[in-house]
Length: 315
Image (cartoon, rainbow, N blue to C red; front, side):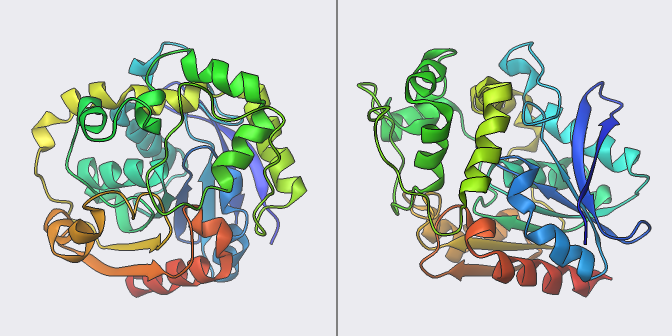
């Protein structure tokens, strides 16, 4: 099934690039990517969903790829802004409700979409990032220090300069090949040398890395990094939802080598009731063995099958 591309003018004022596959009029599955990726991370799931009778719609999120990159600073990248884009996209597609599958930052946005507008989501499959309690950046800094990657991403210009020193392709190779089951740190002394040789994982081709590199060469990383820089503002703005439950049916899938799954306390949170307390309609938790963070690219068929089998329950 062919993947087509178009630009959608959203009511939020953002021009959003979307990739689509599947029959018009079929139930829509909205596919939300994370960092540092684009719609392209869903290239394997889109044909599978189309073949199963769904219309797969994968946008480049605000600040990424061929979508607009707002230049108003991090305050243009709060979760509320990005969820607003998703609601506007669902409207532009002419849909009342959609299924959502989402990874990493996309999953964070998807959980909030379910929180703020449960009327627009039929069911969610979240990859890698569970719903967690709200937290400011200082909490990460106190626990993990200034070289923890989220903390390193905070100062405008600093990490961009480090990425420029290394080169876009090498930066992406470092992220995509990261399989250490633990926290990611980016030393202030430097994240290696521009001459480092980082082999691609088996599931990333040279064509794949060239596509991602071309996208970030065009946009830079600032838009993507602004999601992290907006964390404190998001924390302030979402205070009314402190402790609120998400009332949307959900399935969660994670790799056992995922850095998120191996963050302190997360496995107990996921498996001992904390996660279910936030998401009472959590239907299933799947932990895939010997799989890292970029789960939908590393295990495309398995993830596609999980998505289809879950959303079929709601047809």
